[in-house]
Amino acid sequence: MKNTLNCPVVRDLLPLYAEKLTSEESNAAIRQHLDECENCRKDLERIQQPIDCPTMPNTEIDYMRKAKRSLKGRSYILAGVIAASCLALLSIFLRLFIIGTPVFIEEAAINYQWNYDADKAVYSIHGSLQQTNTSARINVYEDKENNQIKVKLYEVIPSVFFNSNQLSANISWNGEKDIVWQGKDRQQIIASSQYLPLSITQFKEGHYTNIIDAFDMKGAARIQQLYDHAAEVSSKQLAAFDEASHSQYLIISIPPTSGTYSVWIKADDALPKQELDDRIFLYQEDGQYYFYQQGQPLKKLSPENLRGLLDYIDKKKP
Image (cartoon, one colour):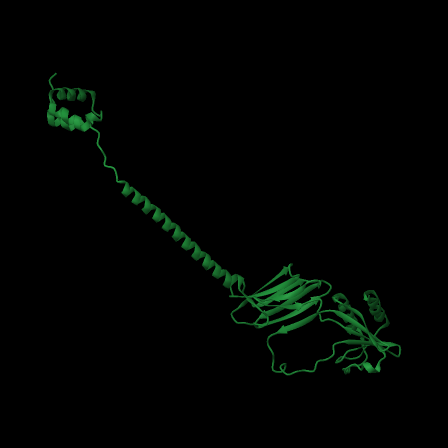
């Protein structure tokens, strides 16, 4: 069979022939031409020779690896900086709007009232922080190591979390632990069984005998109730009790169950005032028993209430 393929056509087909992409009929014609044409055979050999691809120098590979590691390290550093910035902003937010700054009662404008409910054994604090544009946050916790109940007040920026300057706390308290107002570096006891004793002393035959001296707020409330409900003999305010004119009597010191703390001093309050004797004297005269307290009217104790008081004293005295 006569070969009809010339060299230019064969050269165009050689790449496809080398890759075995031509048909059998074309292959036969190309092989016949190659048998007759040395130049085309050389072209085919050149096409079939493997191509040596240039390799990248090791120095360039090392540089790219170092660049990749450096970029990765910078990404970590950037992520760390962003995380640290977020934590710093969160810390500032918590400090200003949630945690606040500790406030000590002697260093800030604080007004509050306290009250002790003997029946429920609850010590209550209700008041306000007088600084403008400031809200209050109060925290009560137990310090077992020091055997204390601590009250801590914080100033915070007003927000949806804390938007009032009012402070309030109800503390379960039986007198076993001191209640302490805790500042940043200072503290002050605001309630202690040592500061609130019920004291009853008997004067008889020229001698004073301490009968009761103990923390008993229920007993104090009971005696206070007896005094409040005793019948008034007159509306005249009494002078100081003349102890020398009586040979026998009881001296009753009832601890307060409420009080007020204020940093504001009015002009009238700045002047010293004569302190009244808040002790209650119980004495007998003409078969009747009387409650005598300076600045208050004279009160007569009924036989029933007298028995209740004497029964309480008999149970509590050592």
